[in-house]
Amino acid sequence: MLSRTANNLFWMARYMERAEFVARLLEVALQMSGMKSREGRTEWNSALIASGCEAGYFAKYDEVTARDVVDYLARDPDNPSSIYSCLSTARQNGRSVRTALTVDTWEAINGTWLDIQVAGRQRFAIENLDNMLSWVKRRALQFNGAYNNTMLRGDAFYFCRLGTYLERADNTARILDVKYHVLLPEYEQVGGLLDYYHWRAILRSVSALRAYHRFYRDRISPWNVAELLILQPQLPRSLRGCYDQVTGNLDLLAGQYGGQTGECHRLAGEYHARLRYGRIQDVFDSGLHEFLTETIDRSIVLGKEIQRFYLM
Image (cartoon, rainbow, N blue to C red; front, side, top):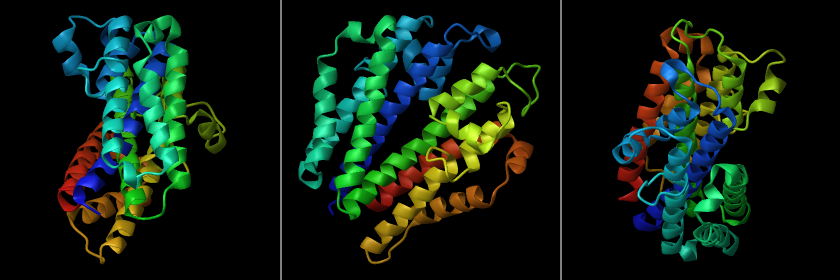
C-alpha cells in the first residue's frame, strides 16, 4: 500500500473518532453546566481544555459562555478540532482513498458530511444541542460498524483500526486528567472523594457508567473510576483496551510487510506492558496527573513514530 493511502486511512479514522469525542464532551458539559468547579470554572471550561482547544478559543473570544463554546467546538470551521472540521477532514481523507473503502464505509462518511452541511446554526443551539450530539455519536458508531463489518482484514483495515484506537487512548487520558484536576477541589487529596455527579459525568462521557456498576457494586469513587478507565481490558475505551488494539494492529501490519518493525512497535509494546502489568496503587503513588500527562505525551510521540515508519 502507498504510504499516502495509509496516511489517509489512518487520519480518516482518527478524525471520525475525534468528532465523536467532542460530541461526548459537549453532551456532558450540557448536562453538568449548572455546576461550578474550582476557581469558578464550569464544565464548558473543562470541555475546552480536554479537547485541546482552550488557546484557540481565547484567541477568538474574551470569556467562556455556553453559546460560544458550543459554536466553537461544534461547528466553527476555523477550529480544526470542531465536530464540523473533523467530519470535513475525515471525508476529505476518505475521498482520497475511495477505492480502498467499501461502499458502506464511504456512504457512512459521505452521508454524515452531507447531512451536517445542511445543519444550520440553529441545530447547534443549546435548546437543540442534545439531539444533534446524539446524532453525531450515532453516525460515528455507524462509521465504525461499517468499516469493522465490511472491510477486508488487510493493511487498509489495520491502519483504520490503528487510527481509531490511538485517538481513543489519547481522548480517554485527556478526559480523565482534565476532569480529575480541573474539577478536584483544592482541599481534596488525590484519590479522595469528589462530588458524585462529576465522577458520574466522567463515566458517561466514555459510555462506561453501566460497566462501572458491573465491575464495582459500590458507590462511584475516583479510585475505581481511574482503574476502570486505565487498566480494565474489557472496557473498549480504557487505556489498556486501546493499547491492546494498537499493539495488535501494529503487529498485524508488521506481518503484512515482511516482519519489519520500527520504533513505533517498541514504544507501543513498552507502554502496553506497563498497562498490562500495572496496578492502580502504583499509578496513584506516582501521581495520577503525571501518569495521564505521560500517556498523552506518549500517544503524541507514538503517532509521530507511526507517521515516520509507515505514513511518510
